[in-house]
Amino acid sequence: MHAAAVTPEVTPLRDRFGRVATDLRISLTDLCSLRCTYCMPAEGLDWLTKAQRLTDAEFVRLARIFVAHGVTSVRLTGGEPLVHRSVSDVVAALTGLDPAPEVSLTTNGVTLATQARDLAAAGLARVNVSLDTLRADRFAALTRRDRLPDVLRGIDAAAQAGLAPVKINTVLVRGQNDDEAAELLAWSLRHGYQLRFIEHMPLDADRMWSATEMVRAEEILEQLRTRFVLAPTSARGAAPAELFDVLDGPGSDDWPAARPQVGVIASVTRPFCRECDRLRLTADGQLRTCLFAHDETDLRGPLRAGATDAELGELIVTAVAGKQAGHGIGSAGFEQPRRTMSAIGG
Ligand code: SAM
Ligand code: SF4
Image 1 (cartoon, rainbow, N blue to C red):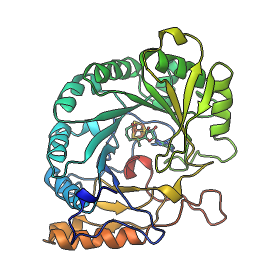
Image 2: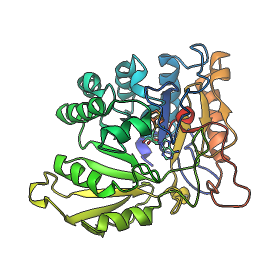
Image 3: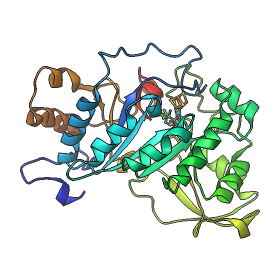
């Protein structure tokens, strides 16, 4: 918690388990240019209407209230945030807040090549690009779109624009790309990108997730250790990724990074719920305090009905106080939430 971010009369976002929320994920849009099998159905979803989506001014006003309550980092996501035409304007408005949060973005990279410079100029600090395979045929099957060359160009453009270090997010799916972990790491290290594997979570629209089939963190690390020497770094704290220094591996003489690392986000098998500092604002203005929550707090309704900043702040404080202890995946009563990953904002 940054004391400077909270004026004395404003309450920090603390829940009943003592966790303080400082990281806000904003889903700028539910629309997307890809149809990843582990996220969306082939035909897409029932998209929000323009009237249902928040306007840029509404996103920024809510973000300002979150920041006044101690949020120090804002990540733009979706759906695909780069489909939102005025994404750079939103970045500029967010980085212009006082105090200014760190603003980052998670993207599928499809149109990043043409947008990276504008985003960097608008004050974007970092970018995470999702890339699950380096093979064009697999990419087309996994995302249902043949866009691998565009994504690779986008990643390169982001690095050139100074959005560094570029982080790569990878989900391994059984039978599709589950043998590609070491290949992806070799490629990332060669380019100086930071690779993070994310365990597949039960948030897909097609409900294809399976506890027995999912590729677990342990298996990913085993695969990597067949070619690389890894050493765990210190405790991860509120950061979801467990980081490993990569001490040696093929091509190590040419790795550009001073301290090459790889991360594993084991949200399912080694959850970090006890340290979670995240909140999510959906494109239609609903506050979610957990990816797996069944309840949402409507901020759009009160905002459009003329609520003051203090009233909206009170709604946020109350919602955060009721944040659930953990996601409960694997427990008897676990139920996948109605909203899927792309509609929540991953
Ligand atoms: N469209 C952008 C992208 O793909 O980077 C941003 C939104 S996407 C929902 C954010 C991240 O969530 C991506 O890295 C994606 O791989 C990941 N994701 C989507 N569905 C997932 C699932 N069921 N389990 C784990 N990660 C998932
Ligand atoms: Fe779109 Fe990202 Fe979901 Fe893929 S993971 S369908 S790119 S929102």
